[in-house]
Length: 104
Image (tube, rainbow, N blue to C red):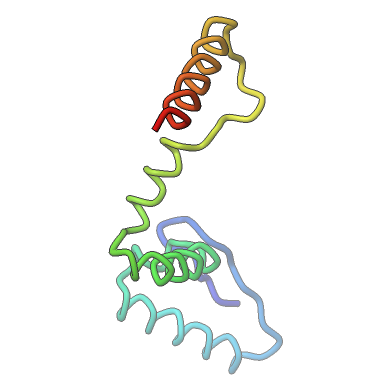
């Protein structure tokens, strides 16, 4: 058994042989040393996705945090309750923009 938990988080892993368990233990210890304990608390899937997203954003010079903030500011909430007044205001705004774009 290898206890791969860090600060009470994570899982205990079980292996068929002591050699496999020792290898995993050394790998985990090496990751702690290279990346610091905090980095090993990030789930691997999230870490990989963050790296991929960072690579996609690099050509435009944006960070992952900037992309998330932009997305949240511009995302449309599907099914969110809205008032009649907000719908009318949105309708009038779109209509005004369309009329202005046709005039130019």
